[in-house]
Length: 367
Image 1 (tube, helix red, strand yellow):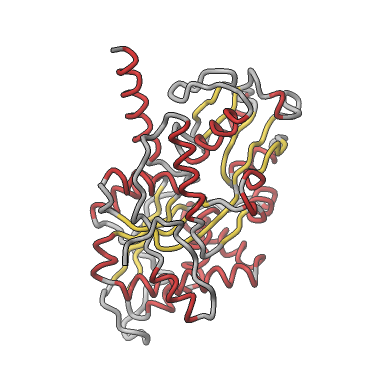
Image 2 (tube, one colour):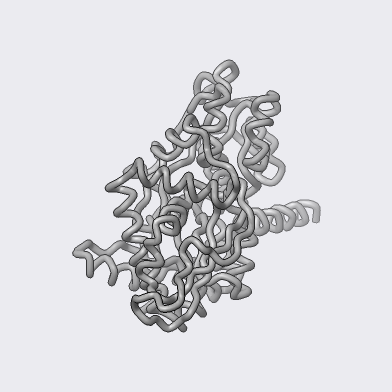
């Protein structure tokens, strides 16, 4: 009975936590005057007057930050108005998507998986990639000089069962270090700590390091931490999904032309970031300042931006692998992810640009 209750508690905690993503200090946003068209704007007439877009004021959501700031989405949407909503975490973004308060949103892999599986596969589709990388294990060099020194130490992650928490648990298990997933207790103490307070926890000595996304990782480095591991080193070709674009299935069915226009804007934004990385970095920081009232200092912004790759491919195989890691850690029942991707609109956009199609790892919608 006690074991069954414990398993149930872990499952409940995991369902709640896996809905989280890793926002960094954001506030709610309403209509976006920077990109909202004025009356009489020239451009294509699409099937919706307005599209509502959600994202986090976080560098790993750079596609949204740069594309909105530069007007690259609005250029493709023509007279269709953009209204934006800035979220702090995955649960609120998923709730807004399910309630019809937003139509598309940039999310991390864990909230997308849980939003999809909890709805029985009816809530959303992943329609494009956005970002890879930007996650590091940073440590106090006076206490941890190598991975062999992790035993007995306290390592922070953003939240129980979130993408980075799963990655740390998987890494520790691979090194033969045992941790109880629910409590975080074991050979290494995994301390679930909000990204906003992790720098203070590190400075006070409450934690010895953290497995965190940017810009939190670079904030810790600015405080004297050292990068022990860049998560890119653990993945084939150094790529894994950290952010992708999802759309409500209802909106996709009703307004496929609007979704395709947003995807054209996404592809154009990634091309701009590749061609003008320094300008794009400045645009992303300006959008963060617009959304939060605070810009990132160069000592944080520069290394954080360099560690993130923005790309059209959603890296579907790494989504499946991340889900498998969560299952192995005991944080997730094996999910049915069939149909979570619909990459047909993105691949039409890529073909029109003379680019090859991207794969869905067998998790696409049937045609």
